[in-house]
Image (cartoon, rainbow, N blue to C red; front, side):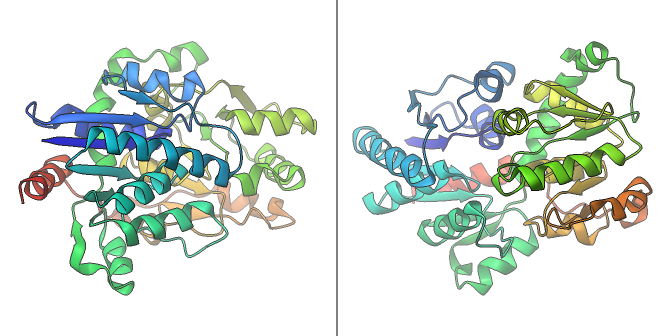
Length: 357
């Protein structure tokens, strides 16, 4: 039996890890890396730290528009699927790699599983939202992380092919947090103590590609009382440098870090500020308050529990929110664990049923 997984970006490497480590040795597990995240600090280091076998195929497709990326990936993935003839293809999340994999597998009639199905931000200006919708509608089996995701799937008439498996990121965090605590030296290297800093990530094009909006966000962060550690995404660094956006003394820029170092930075922060979907979820799993610099989120459970606060990056005077964000401290009593347990085992059990059927 042969299973083929398609990944290309940081969150997908992390979701792949528990599957790769727990899949039966009798299964031939082939991995395609599209190359969507090409920077060594955002790609190779994850495979090294998580002791994952190197992908059999690396397509090195990272440049160009959404159409360029998706089209080139689709061409190459189709060739590989024809050669490998897998019994099942697994796609993860909502990237261009997800979309290309979904289109290639579905058009060739290969059984297709979408892990992290059913998420909706209901903002179709986000490319990821389009990718999610198409991936769900073309997949044969939908593995949903939460009840809210299952409700979205039901609303779109797809419930007959959906399974509530829980969220595989729970297993990823549990699998690597202990290793991070024993191996990572990032806190020592940066001179950090628990809860004496906030962690910041910014990479969404609608936040960083507009220099005026990015400058407004940075000015707001400069006014907060917490110091920030900012592992800066290459595209964000480029815009800050090009437009000479002023970074306050309370924001320390560092290069992107591997998963173990990032887990330690998350687990010891007093708050996490981000526009990433996956990091909102990791913050919630680790019980770290999160401020999401977006008008909506696909992880609605984190907001309804009070542990994730949305702020509108389009608000002209973000300074009005400084006191509110400084005082943001959610209550333990409102924390509701929603992402499941034994998730990888649940998923693999269903996958084995599918390929034997």
